[in-house]
Length: 288
Ligand SMILES: C[S@@+](CC[C@H](N)C(=O)[O-])C[C@H]1O[C@@H](n2cnc3c(N)ncnc32)[C@H](O)[C@@H]1O
Image (cartoon, rainbow, N blue to C red):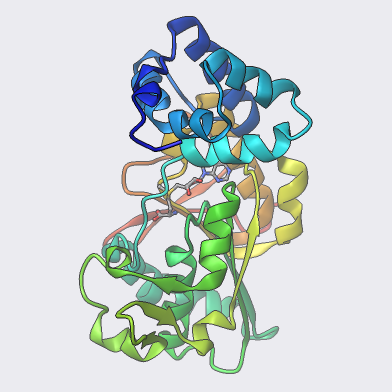
């Protein structure tokens, strides 16, 4: 069916159906979807109804709850309902603080094992994870160390895209900073491919951050970037995710959030760590 079929525009998400979907997505992924999300939800999910040739959102709800392929369809629905905006070198003041102030500290703490691991939790299409890898390599502080960057996202499509490692213009809001051009390869079609050196450090996997049992596969890491993810979650989900991130951070490790996010009223377990241009959260050293 054509995307512009008149039928498509007639698919209306009724308020009572909207409430059911909100509850469903809140339960599965911790997504915070209030009454104001009805029209955006209608717009985001309509393509799925068209793809499955369904006549109403109620039918779609039944598919998500009871169909033998409900699980695969839920992946599609969650992918449609989450916001994946991201780009390389996002929030550069924080990345500068990470590279110039935090990385030397972490490298000093780990000089015996010569092993560092980072987690981009909610990495979307991978730009954040590859950015971290480029920053770490360019610092020159950990040459020949065992460095790993894990990227995870609830969206399977995003994870596949990240693994592919090929990006168009929109992934670079501005040109690649000169110091980093050697980490990327320009392709004949104009797209940019992440180079071998940063690709080798990065590993991607699908993961729902509200599912604490699954997140343990990441192991304990030295720093976590969980930027622009918590803003989309309910208070309860945010608390659960933060507690998971705390567990996955080694004592003394740091957590970086997006510029509009904070742990105020979420937890007191972390120490605030003041950098010249930024504020990050540290799991107190020595905590069991
Ligand atoms: C706006 S993007 C942020 C990407 C990147 N961290 C950045 O700051 O550029 C938010 C990502 O969080 C993911 N996300 C939302 N809820 C999630 C959950 N419960 N578990 C894992 N990822 C989730 C979404 O799929 C989306 O790709």
